[in-house]
Image (cartoon, rainbow, N blue to C red; front, side, top):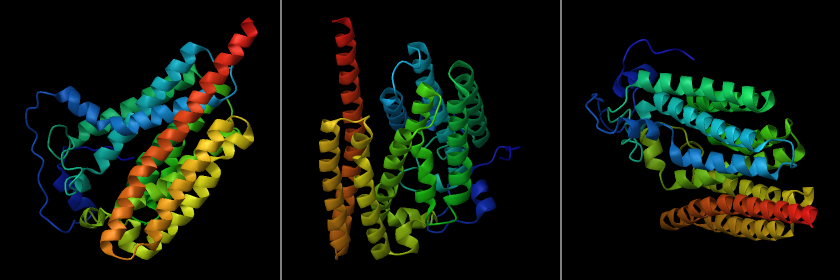
Length: 333
């Protein structure tokens, strides 16, 4: 990754990567900001970080018990959170040019001039190094390696390479968001197992329908930023078909924890029901013909996808905690 040697505005960076069409490039002028700490927190993408922490916690808790001390578990979650935030900062550093022209990202710290690109880059690099080193020193080498690979994958493979070059950006790049439960599992056990791979696959297969549904009703925004999202490159019909296929695969993998033994019957029933609802929304989107219907069902699917992922991981976590508590009570009895 090249180090920035001079302060550059989003407009300067755009010129290096190629012009964006649709509107003039705003020039970010650094100005006094009374909430500097708040801007640095925004660089960490706290909403994304919270999802990463949650899924990593589920992976750590769902792993076989008794192999990690409580202090190590807490440190592992903190390191994963910091690593996730570092990825977000590096992403915002590189994507400052397209953030400046997309409606939903114009208010981010670099486009609005509250943080310079160099500051964001150094911030991301320092946090990356600290999180990986601490995880390796205090927990284990495998989890540190997976965290380092995840940061590299998101910042370099996805952000720098795939995002602007292929409509498969979300499919391949989605692996970065799917690693946290595997990192949590590795932190707890020091190994990668079939169970942790299943948790990875649930998020990996969830990512394309989630983001492609978003892109169906935000296609103009992505087109303005010249990001080759599936609807803009392959068309609406192809996107809807692929959303449906990924939804079916995800719903099937979603019930696998029950068959592998680290998810119980309640989880299996809930995951199956939620998966069927997800597939039904995808089916309705597939059959939608009018632009209004496509946007309507794309929004429905997008928002339900958030509910789906949150619920199945929350149910798995709750079920695991209850099971462990009952096992502990039995040992005391």
